[in-house]
View: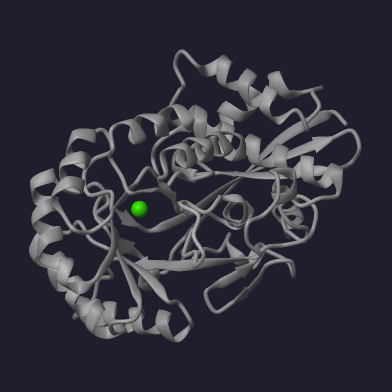
Length: 379
Ligand code: CA
């Protein structure tokens, strides 16, 4: 089986006014998705996805940098091809666009590897630890309106009603406002729902410590990205000073980048994103590091259809960290904002009940991705 062609499909849709929101760094008014399609001489097709932040630049990287390396190669040689692509960009592309683009390629290669073997990706990766993947809902951002706290409480209650037992709240809007948001959401959801807080890099270590100490009484499962990602000393300070577990790593790249996070003792919970950090191949190397250092891994998930399927396969193969009789992780982040390129593109192999997704038995990422439409409607 040889790679015949690689195509990139870019999608964008404006969000209706009531579905627009802000996180700590910016307003979100559009939804974008980048899918990568790898065609082979056998007729088998593999699908990947890249985090869409840099649009055209990612398409150019795939088409002009990686495509020439991959054409004519056997897609099942995932380790070798990843290393060849990485070596091509090593000097100027160890992080950022080059790795995001490589993520899409690598996910598509693993989809092909599974389809060629008629096995799900999780079996190709060495087998699954679990048949069902628990998720938590992300969606409590800042929504404009006459009474933002009431909107927040209403949305939080809706998520609980739909069956979510864990919810993440966007913070980083200033200490006073954050404390008000945490109190409002905890009031709305009651004591039994797990509540995570995401500061989206908005604070200094000192501010993050103040925030954590003020909200610890609300039983917070973790505090995510308290400081900018470069501030490893800040991460360490926050982690040493507060009673809440610290999470981070969604914008870190490859096993090399995650190695530095681990070496700095920066986080309790690693959150690499498979559509950013380098796909399955980088992730399996990350998992070896995490296991060796006994650090928990809960994948970041700001993905569309293909990325979601990849995340489900990934969560199936993350080893228990640490192993114990009553396991409680990993828990997958599920984007509960409006995304026209998300679950609506998935076929019957995507099965979710309440907040739990069933790990598919079908080959590759799971058959039934309705992406033929995505490819067909391009001019
Ligand atoms: Ca986050």
